[in-house]
Image (cartoon, rainbow over all chains, first blue to last red; front, top):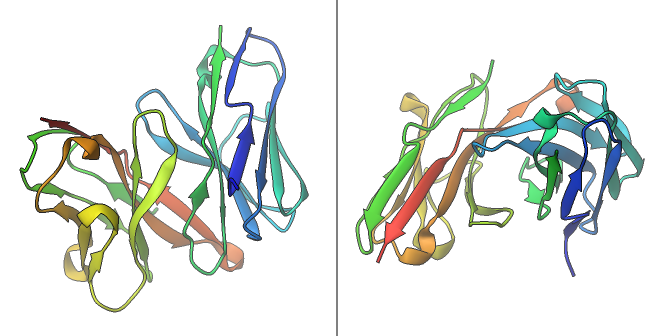
Length: 112
Length: 116
């Protein structure tokens, strides 16, 4: 059973399109995150939700909109995709008292 | 602002060589420290973590790290690397934010290539 699962794993799309990535965790964790990993492997936090409440919102263009329907799911919707959005997006979850993250397998987004 | 610095961006070793990857952090409060590994094409996996207690932490696959508070460092070591250790290694520090929540801040990563 995959603990943190993301779909799709690969996404190739044209500039200007809108796309979504879904994430689900079955670990019973309270907190979920979206991280972006660029071509140089640098990992940057984008958003975090705790029990469906937004707690971290880094400097991210408002074309990116996270949604957490329940504490086991955190989806990421991206409007008007740009070339610079090409990256691997990782979902993660944690129990708040440790800070230790459990990562999904990543979703590689390529914008042409 | 909290930050994590990894000094070695790219390390190349032969099998059986010893490894030490540097990590320094900038954060004034109580820290939880982590090393994650990302094998080619895969997601991040936890290698080891330090919360409190013995500053020498043992992890999986023969890795260990030492927390030196006075130096704000958490260097990763392995006495003898294998070809299968080829991967990207990330140091991370857990920073407390408002509301009692946590934010994991990653270093830029060190790419390790081990040649047979």
